[in-house]
Picture 1 (cartoon, one colour):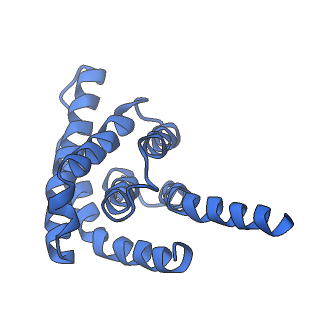
Picture 2 (cartoon, rainbow, N blue to C red; picture 1 turned 120 degrees about the vertical axis):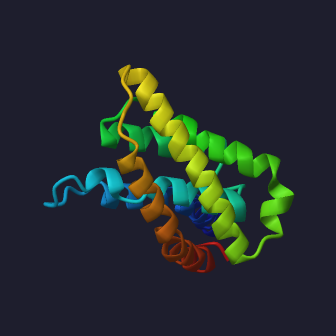
Length: 169
């Protein structure tokens, strides 16, 4: 009986590892650095994580997990509540509706597809922020964040692949 409980706890912990890793990376990304105006250009770790896990382990990055990731990011960033949630859920919908394309793709193709999905997600976030603030926000910080996010994808995808090998056997 005792072994069955530990086995179930192990399965639960392993299935929560993508969510936990994502939340941890969001917290690390929110650490205040002593560099002026760097916040808008820091890569969107949440976007990369949701994309990666939704492609590779969709059963572990559910809609509710994505909602929690978006809510966590919105609360920590101090931005408008719901903007991050909407963008991340849009990423999930795109991947879910085009699963056959994503599932058969090589790493290079997934990176290109990520660049396209990231552009749409960051544009949606920028647009929603413009609407909620009632002003036309500068586009340059979003473009830099897009570039850093696309550039960071291979490193974080590698990290997530290692975590997948270690925790999700």
